[in-house]
Length: 514
Image (spheres, rainbow, N blue to C red):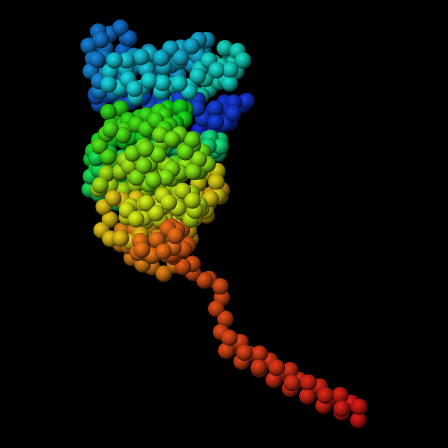
C-alpha cells in the first residue's frame, strides 16, 4: 500500500471511530479521547520496541510484571525513554480485553497515573507530568454510568487498535503523526477561536519553517513562543535533517489542553524528551527561556489581535523585550508584543518567521512607532502577503513577517503571494510549487513586477513606516486593454454603414412613392 493510500485508509478509519463512538460527545471532546488512545498506543509500542531491541524472539507484551529482568532495566529505561510501562499496562494487552473489562475506566486511569509517576525524580519528569490530563476516563462526558463509560472507552480503544500503522521501524511514527494532525485539523474549528487562535495548516507551516531556516546549515535550536499543538516546530523537523537542529525544539503555550497535545505530538513524531522543552504559561507575562542562549530559528502563529494587559502594567515598559521600542503594543491588539518577544529571543545569525494580522502593518499609533523601531534598526527582512482562506476557521488573508538581525543592506523586501493558491473544498492551500516560488524570490531578493520588490528603508520612513505589501508591490491590472484608436475606427465604420443604409432605404421609399 502506498503512503497516500495508507494515509487515506487511516483517515477513513478515524472517521469510522467517530461515527461509532461519538454519539453525544462533542467533537472537540471526542478528539481528546482518540488522541489520547493514539498516544497511549504509540508510547506502548515505542517502549516495547525499545525493550525488544529488534530481537524477534523477544515479545515484551508476554513478560510478567514481576520479572527480575524488568527490575534490572527499569532505571536505565526511564533515563533513556523518559518513562516506564509494565507489560500488563501496554496498550495491546489492555485493548485485547477492553470489551469485557468492567473496571476499564479505573484501570486506564491507574495506568496513566503510573506512567506519569514512573518519571518522578528523573530529568524527564516535567515532560511526562500531566500528559494524560485531558484523557479523563471517569468524565461524565463519556456517559452517566460506569458501564456507559466503559462501553465508549472500549470502542475507542478497539477502533485505535484496528488502525494499521505498518511496521514500526518503517513508517509507524509518521502515520501516528498524520493521524494526530488529521484530527486536529478537522476539529480545529472548535479549538479556542475566541482567543484568536487558529490551527496552522501543514502547507503554511512548511513555508514558515523554510523561511526561518533558510540558508542555515545548522541551528542551535528552534522556538515557537505560541506553540499551540506544535505543528510549526514539527514542520521544521520534517523539512530538515535532524542534525541541523542541534539542541531540539522549544515552545511555550498558555492553554493547558493544547500544551499537553504539543508534548504528545513531540513524542508521536519520535522526538525524545531530551530533545524538546515545552513550557506552560503566558508568553507575554511569564516568559520562559529568557536566560537561555538566543534561538537561531523562531517560527510562530501567535493569536491574532488578542487582548493583553499592556500599559495597565507599568512595569512592562521596562521589560527588556519591549523597552527598546519605547512603546507597548495596544491593550486590544497584542500582535506586536509577540513580535517584539520573538525579536528579543532571536540570535544574531537567525531568522524569525511570524504569521501576522495585516492591520498591524499600516495602522497608526503605538503600532506605527513599533514599526519605526523595527525598520530604523533594520530588523525587517521581508513581508509576505498570502492568499485568503488558507487557515481553518478564518478567511483572513494573513501576512508573514520575517525578522533578521544580520541583513546585508538597508532594504526591506515585499512579496505579494496572494495569487498563489490551489482551491480546495473548504479552504485554499499552498502547493509545493507555490512554496518553492516564494522561497526562491525570498532568497534571491529579485524584483519581479507585480510579485516582489525590495524597498530602501528610507522610502518606508517617508511613507510613515507603512509595511503593507500593497503599498510597494503594484497590483497587476488584469482588465481587458482597449485600443481606443481601433475602437474609434470601428465606430466610424459603423456610422458610415448606417449612413449608407439610410440612403439605400430612402431610395427604396422614394421609388415606392413614385
